[in-house]
Length: 364
Ligand SMILES: Cc1cc2nc3c(=O)[nH]c(=O)nc-3n(C[C@H](O)[C@H](O)[C@H](O)COP(=O)(O)OP(=O)(O)OC[C@H]3O[C@@H](n4cnc5c(N)ncnc54)[C@H](O)[C@@H]3O)c2cc1C
Image (cartoon, rainbow, N blue to C red; front, top):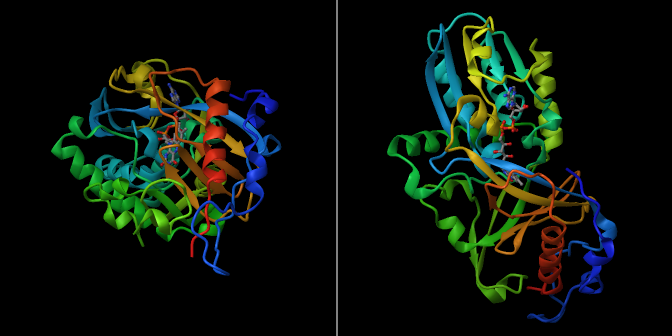
């Protein structure tokens, strides 16, 4: 959902003038200043703002095979704020569960990132696939994601089981490998140095996914915040990525049928003996999973700035530069179902990044 912003309100604070060059409040060594390129945040850069809903479960994503009338049904939903990241991985787990001993055509319900990656893996295993979906890929939550390859914001540590943890570990490894093997140019994937809080990199088992990580003392990084870490990760231009996945699917003989299911009984009418449920937040209503709920994020998109070649995820929010624009976000609002962005939150997001940019320092 788009919103008309009061551009004058967004200019309030007057920090824009500070963004034109390297601020000098920090350490500057004679002739050795290497500033980060500041993100331009004046109102003219803002192209749109929107709210969208992460399909969140405290107990983590669901990948499970169920018997369903005379069919097999495999769930693959509930990835919270990490669905792009986990997509190839949980879809690999789901297809392994579903395709064992299977013959004949397959139905995938949903055309977001989970539906498309599941469908591609089923095709790669040699089975014909039809995707049934209420919305085309460009109208899904997946198409609104920030696009960082980062396993965060998708479960609560105290709510998950040991069995889930081992699924998670396998999913992460499989997804990482698949993403790294993809044609970056074609799918809109690029690697960028990413600044973040050091604690974030200390999560158990995640070290392989923060390559090149280094701790930086306050005097050694350009932000006027405390000690940070920097590492490299992938950023996915989600629109291009989904379009390419959908094109791959169609080229391989798949078909997409527009259909919204309101009850599980309607699914049992499908001809295919194996179904994959990739309905994201839709699984709450369709399958009555009350543990699944929305965590709303609000995003501000800026016009592309190709000269910005770094990203950050800081307490004040995140900034991901993509080919189609700069993504500003990082808000998490539980159980908010509205996708209408709140103008005050939107102004707050922009202002937080302005403050950060205004404090950018040169480092040696
Ligand atoms: C603000 C924000 C930022 C994010 N940033 C990132 C990020 O940087 N990195 C990352 O990895 N993840 C990120 N995510 C998370 C990611 O967007 C989601 O986890 C992911 O998109 C979920 O994909 P999905 O395919 O399960 O669901 P969706 O994309 O919602 O697709 C669901 C599909 O199912 C269909 N469907 C639903 N119900 C029915 C029904 N009853 N009948 C038929 N079809 C149905 C829909 O039409 C749709 O096609 C972000 C999310 C938000 C909201």
